[in-house]
Length: 236
Length: 236
DNA sequence: TTGCGCCATATGTCTATACATTCTAAGGTG
DNA sequence: CACCTTAGAATGTATAGACATATGGCGCAA
Image 1: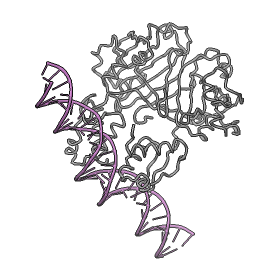
Image 2: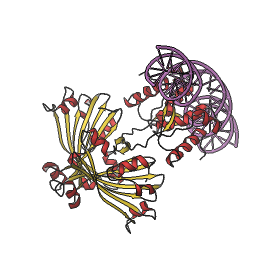
Image 3: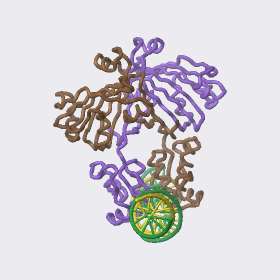
Image 4: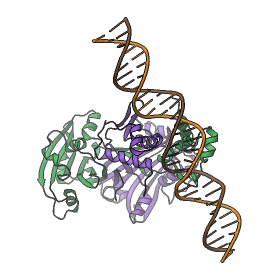
């Protein structure tokens, strides 16, 4: 794979930063210097530096120069795969079993639900994900009918609502909260595991602009599932 | 805030996609059409579209055109904060208590440890993180002396090794695995909690290029800690 | 009808230039 | 010495044009 010139400039600087040759707060060569180093026009250099700035690796200050950003060790990329896809990738047969489908108003006094409902009704969708017939996760989902009226007519018997939403509803923002909880009686019963079993709890909310679309709680069997986050070039 | 022209083109198309006016797989106007619409040069249009492509909102195919991408939930940004900072931010007093500091060879037959050691010795560093005096997490860490010889002389009595490494050792790649496990007798004893309590297990490995630096297992008290991942503009 | 090759189309990259905007530092003035 | 002005430096934005390269459809030939 031959890199284009601006990609080469970009990766050169990138590796200088990642290897520590360029330390945080260090000043980068100015555009004119890089023009001479690589014998190219300023626009080419600019494209490389702008990309690095967009990626958060460097900070550019008009009139002052370009500087290496502070290590951003604090963020990694978390893969949040669609469950059916993920289960299939691990070589198992995926199954989804709907448990509850209920059209209802937001619970009075529950601020979360009231925000999600936006004055209209909510669709509650609970279900059980399984792999090779064994329970994998229990899901409790609320969908705002104000934001997604079409879901009232969707066929959600075989396909989990998360997959349907992913395919039909564009969203702009999401937040996922990950914790560990013991299974209560109901969860434990559905997952066919003793009460108190360690479960990975994934809570996710989704927005389109400032409008709330859906909120979901997924209880994964702790020993059967894990999440992976990465930083840097993907590793097998 | 007045947007520059390429930003305006970018946001115009962005909102057309997010509002659903442009559906996934739809074809965008070609660059020459956008040039006429906005009465600008091709480079300006190109900059806007390239930014959208870099953000994953659209897909560009040379010779074919630009198309709205399928919504992908596949990646979110996971905040992996430095524990002392995170605890302080929540208004608690952070504490770290070293438990084990042992220079040893890789366990024979343990492929993970042998890869990490790279033929030389490992530094094992176990410790307990606490918030307001209450146990928060147990940490079991291995550091490759081949990669980080300086850590043999570091003062790790008050500062956890993770924080020291973060500040002194540049790394290029990391992988974090998140799962839920029950506390075994040892973990439970350290965390002052019953055996079997649900713990959030965070396993992280770090590389510099292809050299392994450190591997750590952190067992968090499930009810006392959670991780957050985000997609989209930061939300309070 | 099928398969191949060509060409118009559309994006990818790069150049050279121009002017705007913002920051820094030098130098002069009170 | 403190303050203000100003010139230069550096990035931000935009233009117009050139050539490169991948795509897909159309027409021609077997």
